[in-house]
Amino acid sequence: MVLPWVGGAIALVLLTSLLLSLSVMYATRARRFKTLGSVPPRPVAIVFGAGVWEDGTPSPMLADRVLAGVALYQQGNVQQLLMSGDNQTPDYNEVDPMIQLARASGVPERAIWGDRLGLSTYETCRRARDEYGICEAILVSQRYHLPRAVYIAQRLGLDVVGYGVPDWGVYRHRSMLSYSLREFMALGKAIAQTWGDS
Image (cartoon, rainbow, N blue to C red; front, side, top):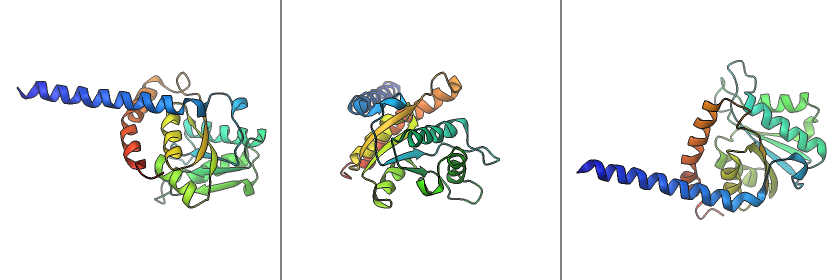
């Protein structure tokens, strides 16, 4: 008798997560852009961290995010880049490699900020607002992550649009399945985190 209840509970959780995901995707659709030329200008681009290799170089996903931010700067869409990532331990540092790649790609040091406490999507957006005084921004991330990022930023009162770096067909299929599943499950947490925080 227990198993049907367990199965029903799991099905309810999955259905709720699916509805939340569809709701967030629909609510943010007009603020997410797939081509650089279509992104409206904002003062700042917020580039989210995405992991580095053991030798400290950016992962392909992180490098693509940074280079997209660089392209927005070079096109004149933004005047500043905020590189936000994890740098909580001496052995792990996302932010410095992001800054180094942006500088090597032609962005002057004065146009780059580094937030070393961007430990999550929520923290990056909250700190952009509270610590850096950002009110308007372009969010830069892969397309699978962008709906949640835009949703969180809007709930925190930021006027944001997002540029979605291509992902499916670019990175390994198995990796994208894992990232997308994690993103699917993270939406509930995002809604809980931002409830009443706008």
